[in-house]
Length: 335
Image (cartoon, rainbow, N blue to C red; front, side, top):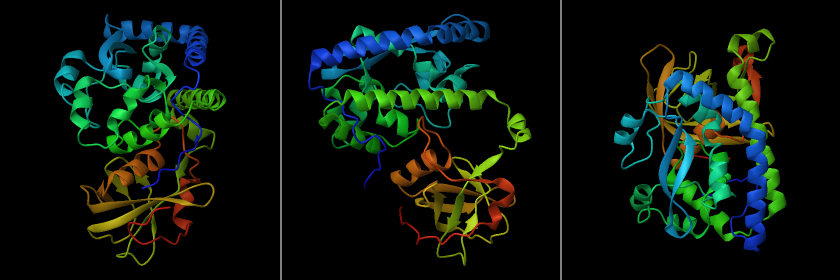
């Protein structure tokens, strides 16, 4: 399985450790100074909506399995989160967010306090996502190369944080981390990556604050170019709406079985996920489940856009989607 990585030059292994450490401190101090007003606003809003306990201090392990306390804005209800995540990561369907928690988590603003972790030397700007010891113990024997991540400091940013959503497969994350751990640091590429991530976060923040009706008033109501195909269908059909577990198509006569969901890129290429499909609770809706980890990654990143760095997906006016045609590859094919 080959992952297409936009920033191929991102590496985690420093060639000159002292120089790289100084670079991390300088960049973190600058980013902290720039983001401090935003952090103050977030802290005040959290105090007003959920009371004291704005910051979360959690146990994590870093380079060489050294433990440290990670800093984040609190996004989960403490008691329920402790019970639900004591031996696993947060389930995708968990609804235990604080009033501002989902917004902060989706925009990644909850991670801004980790700049202090970078300054203290617990983390780098770029590196593998920091994990708890219990999560490491859960996956280390089952996922090849999982422990490679502990050869370097964990990172505030990184390819897995930028290209994968929160619910992405740990196996795919480990594969990407292992590649980056073996690759030397390129600070120019890393700075370019950081700028891209910051730009994407700002765009996502603006999009989350602008009401959908206002976007529609300015004529920007657009949908991703997504199609359903398979051997059971005479022709591919447009997907009019999709979530993590359901999709809506009109008048297709779809029967339960194995299908391919294809997302058209702006380049004309496809990203394809194989899924198992069956009728939903409402007319023209169907429930689905990805057939493998790669399919789940394609759905989350390309169909739902649940990643920091958005992929170059083609978009169409929703009212004209049904007029598009597409020759769908056989079920299970990938672009």
